[in-house]
Image (cartoon, rainbow, N blue to C red; front, side, top):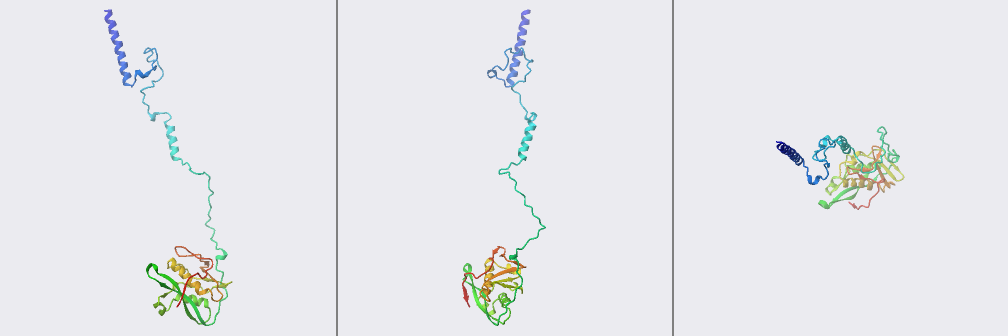
Length: 265
């Protein structure tokens, strides 16, 4: 009878050991690699070990105590802009819109001077004629004469330029880049060989860059060389014209005759 009790106890302890082995296997424990993980006392201290098992303990990153700090750090990294160049701050330019634009003295129309008076005679004016066809077509200056009744030659010559060639001259292909819309102000100034002319804004419109160049050459060749004129300066609305057209054709300070061929007509 006593022997049966010992057998039952051995079976019971064996069953418990077997269950523990199954539990260890299910939790991924490998006795071959575990080494001295369990104390030498075996299972006698089972339940008394205060340390948490170091295996088969899945960790949840969202339950980590440092998770919130790490998340805050990442947000700071993404939201913060780090400069890739020198962090020197540039001084801001302060613009005061209440300060009016100033025109330099040399850019202002110098004012009316003494008008020129000349005897009747013939004066030369310069128009245009195109030679060639298509892309090879080029304009040439054409020199023509006009009968001058006497008086102020400056205003007379500009009016002849905007009036354009006569009907007979047009049949020969002569034309003008200066239209009738372009007007000259009656006040001008001739000083130290420089003729200061004030014209309407229409000089700036209605033509390609080549046409704008032709306009300037017509004016320059018509005036320079007559009445002691050595150069021309153009103004509009009281200010010197520095450029023409939408492309910004630059104009020199003083217009003079260019190296351009002239056809006598």
